[in-house]
Length: 317
Ligand code: GLA
Image 1 (cartoon, helix red, strand yellow):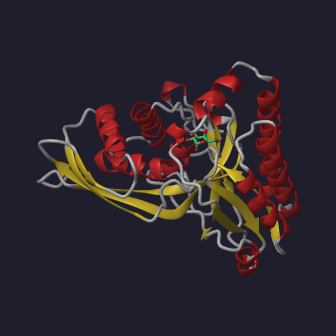
Image 2: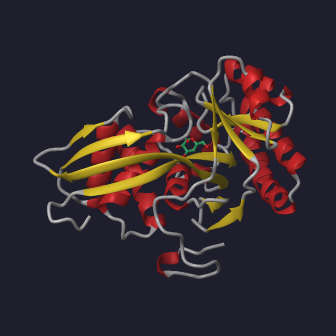
């Protein structure tokens, strides 16, 4: 922004979700973190929208952000090391990078909300706001505790030496081809198994934050295992192939715990490891690719200091 030819660059990270799965669209509390895989978009005004990108459906995403912002058509070039379809939210990284490039002056929370609307508009999938918030407002050395009902959020310190591993199940899918909207409707309508997952998962988010604050690493692992069982048995978003990988991760020396992460139906698995346990996890998983990540800064500057209340009803935890 600001260059005479109107050219701009925006950069935004992918994310992991530590815990709080399939609760964001119900106004629940989630604990994602931005991670050190980034999408960079350069753009300039043009006669029509165009994009050079490896992210599937990238043009529809970018255009939808442009429509939300009310900007003229842009010619875009995308480079990214957020692997599409693997659960690190390549779509949020792309959306937020476009928003950050075009409107770096926006408050991060506002940018996240408009990116959520853009994703819903581009795909027809009624996604929650977790991924966009994490990509916009995550911070290095922290996870982001976000109440998706009130949008209150605060950073929770995440230890630098705890290893975040993201295991690629090899099943890369677009959310539009999954029963994501159906699961959302089932949970909203109060279907007992779905509600049981949501209620137990919300308890686990709070317990996970308490365990992080207490430095209780075994408890973090136990909560991941319980979350996986609940996503597998009550929310029914896992697959036998993912379950098999999760069980191999559970058995790996130094692995605190693991669970299916993100929307599910394939995608990726999150594991947390004691430092130095990387090689043993990789060996335990055979051919499944593992990416080791660190927490990273989101695309937008941090929110105002804790406790500050801003106009528009947005509060910070
Ligand atoms: C996807 C959606 C998120 C969230 C997760 C499940 O990543 O984009 O909004 O609903 O699935 O927790």
